[in-house]
Amino acid sequence: MRYIFDHPDRMLELTQEHVRLVAISILVAMVIGIPLGILITRLRWLEASVITTTGVLYTVPSLALFAILMPFTGLGPTTVIVALVLYSLLAIVRNTVAGIDDVPPAALDAARGMGMTGSQRLLLVELPLALPVILAGVRVATVAAVGIATVGALLGAGGLGRLIFEGISRVNTDRIVAGALGASVLALVADWALSRLGDILRRDVRPSGR
View 1 (cartoon, rainbow, N blue to C red):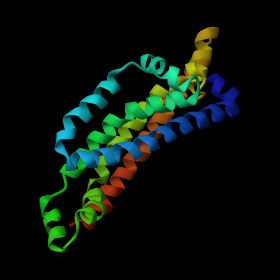
View 2 (cartoon, rainbow, N blue to C red):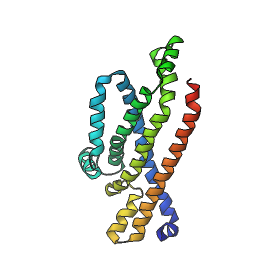
View 3 (cartoon, one colour):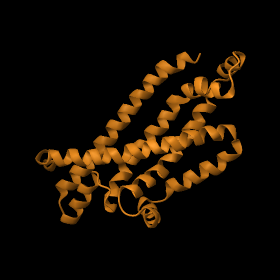
View 4 (tube, rainbow, N blue to C red):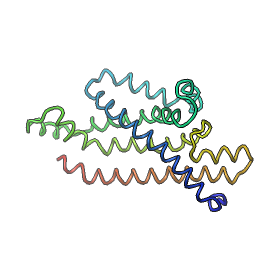
């Protein structure tokens, strides 16, 4: 704990690096995962293969995945971001499918009765109603990414993991605690913020779809 109070500037710098890594990764994963989930709801034969593939990727240990990616992406943030994107896809794709599947048939029937096209139903009915469930997947992916990103410090990607590995190499418990505590607080803050956003969406978005 002492290191945090003695080096606030470095803690802030490493936290910003960590947030940047996670934010970029989650945004890219959303850009890939949400359309992929939508596609699965239209082409059901894709579901088993996509969910199985993303599930297998999620089970690969982070160090092993980094080692597989390094010949193609090298050392540094790029490898870590690619790995975090791959790890995040399972939760985002699965929740996108679940959210769209959970849309009440009555809402879809009403949309068809109003003459909406398939694209209009997707954009104006299905996605707004599915958004809280999709966000829950983003929430799970974000919390996991915060933890996995600490290992990325081994590749020179920066972030709070640097303190942990510095502490291990120097046998300095204070640095290890500072890095671990910083990552834990960051994960909790992200989880709380996304949970609150999900509550707001459930309260405000769902009624508009009825």
